Image (cartoon, rainbow, N blue to C red):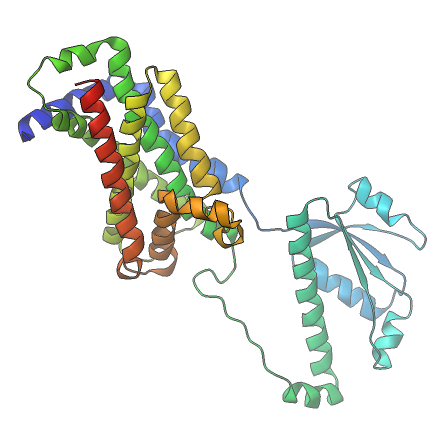
Amino acid sequence: MSARKVGAVALKELRQALRDPLSLAMLLGLPAMMLVMYGYAINFDVRHVALGVQDLDKSAASRELVASFVNSTYFDRVADFPAGADLARSTERRVAKAVLVIPLGYARDLEAGRVATVQLLVDGADANTATTLLGYASALVASANAERVRATPAGAALAASLLDYEPRVWYNPELQSTQFLVPGLIGFILMLTAVLSTALSVVREKERGTMEQLRVTSLRPGELVVGKTLPYLGISLTATVIILLAARFLFGVSVRGSYLDLFLATLLYLVGALGFGLLISSLADTQAMAFQMGAVTSMLPTIFLSGFIFPIHSMPVVVRALTYAVPARYFLVVVRGVILKGAGLAPYGKDLAFLALYALVVLGIAYARLTRKEL
């Protein structure tokens, strides 16, 4: 393989990309724009939920309980319902997402040492939000119970004999979903843009008829493949830098590990993605077809089968087996480890090995098809 010929093809492809400022702006700007859009749109954190209150006790203890809900910032008190109000109607009309019901005698039961019962009515139309709200409410009630136990003389002695439970969360102590989602978005965006860029570049040669001109030159198939891939590898790495800067300054997601480790893992991932784009270009004859094939085969598996949003361990066995063929599954494990945990590459040897195997397989198949069909 001649480095001079590869460089000539790469320079020609780079000039072609520079002559199309719109496409270049999309390749560099679209990843950052998608990160901003998805980063703000996809958020599992539930805050400022509309809370209705039906306080039938109207005591200092009941007001203290309501205040604990409101001060947590998870709930915003938006309505007070009198006795006999149609609470189901209020959630149906979306006046409140949840309703806290404090019955008459709540304070009296607490003072007498009896169990005081309260009720939280939650709109379950959105099951994920409802589950999160129930968890928040349980934590708030547990915290209120602990404070009451410690505030009473008898309770202090009891509390001293109880198990002291102090949970501690590593790597994402505030449990912000952005810290989890942004590294996943990096894998998703890079896969989509890298696949589409190489797929469209080769198919463009077919549509314009310039592939016939390349066929009669002294270029070898490998030189053409490498030459057309290198510029888009550089553009994709530049897009990676832009994405990391946007993640740092917009979402506060900084790289805790080594940038070199992150670069090596990303480079391996991008080589496989670019190879997959070449494979699609060998199957498609028009840019429209290449775009559709690339978008479907890179976007959907990365979203649904990589662990980006949905946990793999909760999937059915058959679907779980399909995830082993998705490179983003392995890349997300590595990139989250480097960015969030500050880990090196040593713990992720198997994941990197699969990314390398995937890159070799797709590049090999793409090379064979392009050689047989076009060259």
